[in-house]
Each structure stands twice: as structure tokens, then as C-alpha cells.
Length: 495
Image (cartoon, rainbow, N blue to C red; front, side):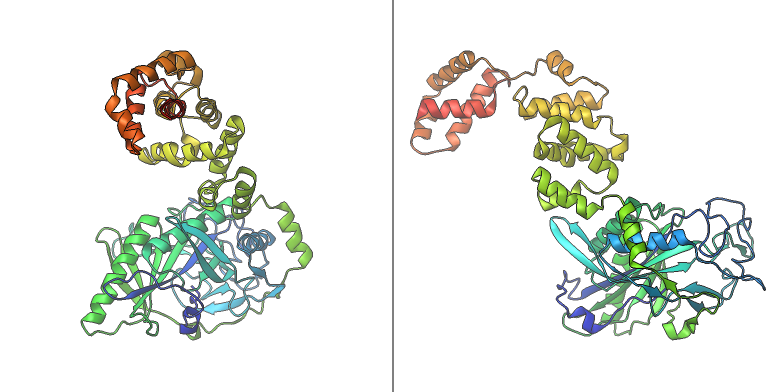
């Protein structure tokens, strides 16, 4: 619940103006709580497992009972270091824990242990594509803190219950500059951040269970004007609702301003049933929380050797892997980024590319036909009916001219429906391209003789006339002729 840095000066550092909505520029910053993947809590040995009976995983330390002292979870610190390395941030050699004071039924201590003035991760950036345009969102900080409990309203008539199982669960709060200019850009950022934390294994990313919770700070302004008053949309737990909530909030703020009303800074909730946001409370500022250093916790000191040890244990990062795909496989920046959306997808591509020896063609099939099928049936890459090895064999048969691209799609249909042998499908369907040069030449001669008009038009400089001849030849060969070979042979004979 820290504040997104939202100053006018920060906006003037080369940030582009986004698409206008009814003449207004949209300004969005994000605060994301990523639950760290430790088995115990940030300051105690209590379990962080999800789904336990209420109040069975809250120990005396989590409740700050008299005589207890918090002890830092080393695994939580190492996960914060991993994140900092993944986004190119500065890892603070010395950071401070503070008490953030507020009073709410699900906060058993009456304060939350967090970091304020000196966070453990400082700066960094998250890069991603929006369509084919590369974007970058600057991060202000990522700091360690403990989670609060949870208020339960559904099972109690006229009352609320409190479940303190989550109290003390380790969180990394990731705060951006207000760099995003549309709901689409905000969702693309959130998806990329989700990819990073799950890729490096510091968070399971389960939005339904609250492991990855996003808050969006939204304001609008006329181009060139000072920043407007922001409202914070809390606990957005799906990318679909995230976009709907931001779009509604933008429309609502513009309507309020156009009607002559001032926007009041507030925390709001999104109701997915109505598609509307509603104010929950007046937004607090840092002064309201009366931060002061926690007297029970010493400064968190991280040596350079510790940082390097963590670096040495990390898997290849997505941005590093994408650069390798560009260098080793000759892929574009865009294709390399698309293929490193998850470890499973990148592994699928590498297997397909190595089996076929055709990285670009493998990339085209994975991001094209395969992605279309998976998205259409809401399947993950791990659930693909066509294995990477099998797709690699199909790509091989395209590259060695055994089958044409159109024939390959027929083979892919069969593979998707359960066939496993590429060559058997090609044989069964009679899809092999014609390799008999003499037979093909005879067909070409017949088509040339029967289409004098097209021949004359082509010789007169009409390139489109050649397409008609190619079509006739493909039809005569029942689609088995190699289109490139047909094209070359035609040009040779008509030269």
C-alpha cells in the first residue's frame, strides 16, 4: 500500500503522450503485491500454505503477542534479490524495515511491518510489446512487507469473521512510475510482470488465490496540463477485470470533470457484476500511516557476495533468452519476445527449431497456426496435442520441399486430431509435392500452350498474369507441384 510516485516532473522525462480519450490523456501507475514462494512466513515459522482452516496458521509472532520478536526469512530476501536482478534494478546494500500504522480488524498488530524510506530493490524497468510496439515501464521500488489477514463476510449474517492465516505472509510490493497511457498498456505490463515473477520462481502467480494482486492508480488530464487527482483501484485479480475497471474509471473521471466536479483522491473497488468502480474510502497518504523504523528488526544488510551468489543460481532470464534467440536463431526482437512468454513455450520452440533446423519457420508456425489453435480452445502450450518434436518433423518436411505450406496445414489438422506420425499422414493423404521435373515441365508446357492471353500479358509486363498461370499449373498437378519451382520454371520458359 505504498504510494506510486506520481509527480509532474516524473512525467516530463521523455514519456510519450498516449492515445487521447475524449480529449484527455490517461495516466496509470501500478502497485502489485506478489506473494513470495517461501514455505514459511516472513518473520515466523508459520506455514504459508493456501486453503487451511481459518486461524490455524497464525502463530504468536504473526500476532505480535507480548514477548515475541520477528526474525527475517532469508528465503524472502533472496527472492527480492532475484527480482531486482531480473529487472536490472539496484539492490540496496542496507535497507530498513518500518512500522506502518493503521487500524483495521484484519491487522492483528495494529501495524504492518513494511519498508518505507529505504526499500531493498530500487529502480529497474519492465519491457514488453504492445502489439508490435516495444514499451518500457520504469519501476520506483520493490519492497518487502508482511500481509494482513482477511475479513470474511459471506458466511456471517450481519457480522464479519476474521481469518488471520495470511497475516505475516511475505509480500514483495512492486511500484511503478505512472508511465502507462492506456488500459491495454497497463494489462500488457501486468502480464509481463506476472511472467517475470513466475519465470524466476519467486511467486506462483495465482491471481484467484491472491498470490498476485494488482492496484491501479488512475488519473486523467488535458495534454500538457498538470497531473490530475488519482484514484486507486484495489485488488484487481484478473487481467480481464483489470482492463474493464480501468476503462470504466477513465470514463467516470472524464464525465465528472466535464460536469464540473472535482475528482477526490480515493481508494475504489471494482464490481465485475456491474462493471463499475465505487469509492471505498478516502485515500491515505504516507503521513497518515505514521511510519517509523521497527525497533525489533535490525537493518537488512545485503553483501555484494550474496547478490552474486543469488545471480549464479538463477535460471536464464527471459530478456537474456530473447537476446540469445535473436543472436543464435536470427529471430526478430518481436518474435524472440513472443517465444519467451513462458519457460514451457521457449522450451517448445527450441526443441522444434533443433529438430527441424529451421528456426524462423518453426517460430512462424508456433506463433501462428499453433498459437491460433491453442487460443481458440483456451489451452496452454503444455496441453498442446502436437508435441514440439512432431511439429519439428512437420517443419522439416516443409523446408525439404516434401510438402507445400497448404499441404502442411492439412497434416497439422490430422496431428491436432490425434495422428502422431508426420510421414504417415503425408503418405495417407497423398500430399507429397511433385519431384518429377519432367512431369512438371510437361504440365507447364500444356498450361502455356492453353493460355496464350496470359502469356502475352506477362510478356507485356503484367506480373499478375503469371499468377494465373501458376494457379492453372497447381490445379493441373492437384496441388502437388512446388510453387517456387513452378514459378522459376515458368519464368525460365517465358523469358
